[in-house]
Each structure stands twice: as C-alpha cells, then as structure tokens.
Image (cartoon, rainbow, N blue to C red; front, side):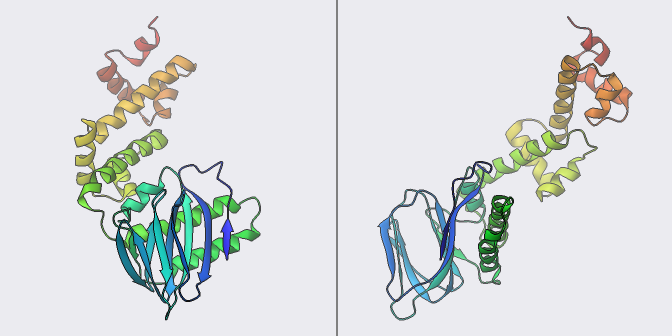
Length: 271
C-alpha cells in the first residue's frame, strides 16, 4: 500500500510526499535508481540489503535506511526471510537538518530504533488521516514531525563535522524565539528551557557566533522594534514600552537612550 501526496503549498519547511507499508516477496528489489526526495524505510520484520555509495548494508527488523535525493541506491528483500517495511517520503528546507540531528546522512544512512513500535504507529495514523478533509495536510505534517522527533531523540549523536550546523540551528532558534516573543516578559532561562539546552552552554554558542550575548540581542531587538513603532504608529511612549516587553516606561527610556543616544521622546522628534 502506498499513498502519494501533492507538493505542499503551505509547509515548505517540511512536507510529506508519500508513505506506505509493504510485505515484500522473496528477492523483491528496487533500483539501482535515484529519487527526488528523501525516503526513510523502517523494517518491521524480516531481512534484506541496502546498497549505496559502494557499500552494502545487511539489515533486519528494528533497523531502517535513508535514501537521499539524487543518490543512486539499490535494495532487496532476503530470499529466505523477506522483509516487510513502512516508509515515508518527504522534503523541505528543514529535512536535511532534522535528519542530521538524528545522525542520518548520505554517508551514514542506517537507522537503529528498537525501543518500541511508535514509528509504525505514526505511519498507521498517517494512513488513517485519509478520513480528514480540511485538516489532512496539517495532521500529516504534524505526524511527520512527531516521527522525526522520535528518531532525533533516540538516534545517535551527530558526528563532529555536523555539530557546527546544529550550533547554527540553535542560534537561529534563539533569534526566532526572540522575534516571536519579544513583547512578553521573557528571560534567558525561558529561551534555554524552550530550546532544551543548558543556559550557560546556549549563551556560549550564541556569543561565539553572533558576537553579542542573548540578553544584548534581546534588548537591541526590542529597541529597534520600538523605533519602528515610533516611525509608523501614533502610540504613546508607555504603549510602545509595554508593546516591546517593558512594563516600566522609565526603565524602557533608560535602555533606549543607552542604545540610541536619545530618549524615546527626543528620538520621535527627529526630523
């Protein structure tokens, strides 16, 4: 059984292209061939082999294999104990990064997950999503995120060569969190808790790559948003202060003047 899906118009970061389950006959094979998107197979029972990049991987229940876009691959079910597997096909700007977090790359394509049957359960829930009309795409995308998050959480650590991209991802998460929540009374502890890293470690990563602390970045972002509000809206200084996360207008004015060299009132009077 296989389900093909149209390209998503709403979830460019990560979207499903197909999913399915198959009980293979002895010796059933596919390839050598290439695919246009990522395909992740997870073996439910039996055995088989996967070949990519001149390497041959014998695989069994509880393992899986990643097919990367535009890479020639070949796989075949065992003749004595043919495998059955489920699979998901997906693409999007986040796909490669999430797979790297799970330790899955073109050069390291084998998945090991024998903890439980949650991967298969998520696949079954995808199949059941056919009954959804308006929310089908959102549900399928959510299930794909859940499946990949499971693999990330319990997969191997990313190799050293890929830790830089992970560090960049954490920094981007910090800036994204600030952009979405600067108007709230957020703390650095809140940001670290959201991302799931130790506060000190996250702060070091951020400063190393951004040449400023998270606190300084947050303050500067708030002040710059306040400047935008002064330029575009007829709001009081108190309203602007509260809108960028400062309940005390006097503290806001002090912070603003320190960064801009002018009080909010005098900044607004500039020609």
